[in-house]
Length: 313
Image (cartoon, rainbow, N blue to C red; front, side, top):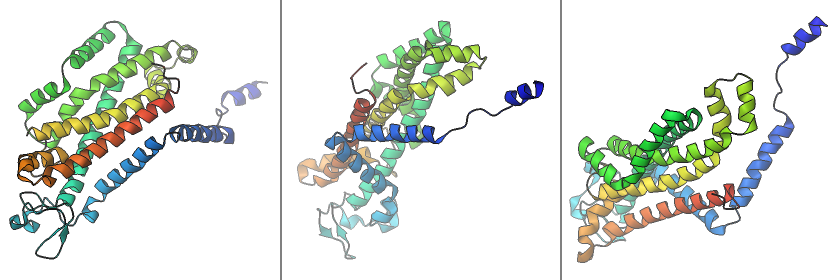
């Protein structure tokens, strides 16, 4: 009898079975099917994948490196779309006032815009989510302090906060990322806290407490996974917001340096030539920015409807 009790006490816990794997696959299939109900959202996802792939493989797709001054000829400046260079290469989207191929500049600009936007949104999501979970689980003065900081952050326009931060830190990709993180973390904190407050009062959390689990394990192993759907939607939308905000800062001359132009800086470089007929210098980077931000927003809206089909708040 004692040996039976001992063997049962040290027996391993339940292992994942084929039923668990099948359930996960069915859940993913149901999410994909729900997302696929919108033709516009599927098209936006396809376009977004093309944009990301174009940014990743920019060195292979671009005809020149717009950052390499040795391959840029200022005599090729402001050539219209379809012009031919002295070496026989064709500038499909024309050149800017410095002689850079606009298509190459857009591809490299997409890399910077997506890197800054996605990086800042992911880090802000991690910081804000952790603070929101701590506020919801701890309660009391800790919750009051964190949420008052959130209220203060959200009460000030994002562009104003970013401008003040960059005025102190100066230009640079890292400084832009820091500014975007400080601007965006609050929305994740508020969202994660709201979701965690709902999950905190459910029976599985009470069961975990009765089993003697640590607060860290309860928060990050049990509560957090159930808070992910709204956070994923917020993350998608905030990536688009971060890209647009970075483009605004670069257009104003406070974003990335001129040696590594993003889409916003490319637009800024050509807007003064719009009335002189050289519209392509700003027009095509603006179209690329519009397509990128619009596709991310459409994907985010469809994800929101997929995870919350009844439109519950």
